Image (cartoon, rainbow, N blue to C red; front, side, top):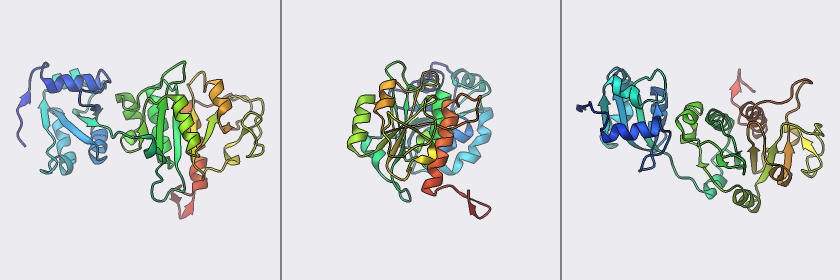
Length: 300
């Protein structure tokens, strides 16, 4: 498809790409920016609406890889081209690959979080509460998705907000998983926790420190015991609450959760960061839910 090369930095499309990529903000149509051939390919295959795809002169080499999706006439995605210099002016990465897209993430509702996908025994959710680093947000969403999470939500902690899962850095860290997983972003935490309780979803507060580190009775009150990951039944409807990198979850949220959960560690190791802890917890969830992939013909 022959298209004239955009040569003005004031072109409206370049302004939108600059806002979405460098500014990390959604465009007027609600589109967010993704950059790099792998992420653009992931976005194209996600089924999300695509406002435009932009190639630089050197990025044109990636067109062949993306052609099976973007060149289908029934899709009719605007394909734009610009110079390498102007592309560098809108890109968020230091060494851009020369291809980017404006993508409109699906809008998810709370009811979407409760839907049980085929093959899943129950909803398995991750709730990010005051996780400020977009890299952590993206990594947690990617990890949760890899181990069978069926949805995610983000909320402010009262002291700090949670980074958008659709910011350029978070999307890179999630490797595009945020475009596939149902996500309710920016919901009021008290309302979200109330709705989870009414829906019969058990809330698990991930904690870094505890006076009681032993496993304990799985039915113990959240205020009396801190459980190890294997003490819980992950096949019931569950929402794992992950708190701020430094402060963790607000105390009132931790105490109101149905259970508190902590990963036992060797002495001298105080805690894992939020993303690493989420990986350990969701692996245990996957093991119980029997969705870990076969390795060498045996369950991992």
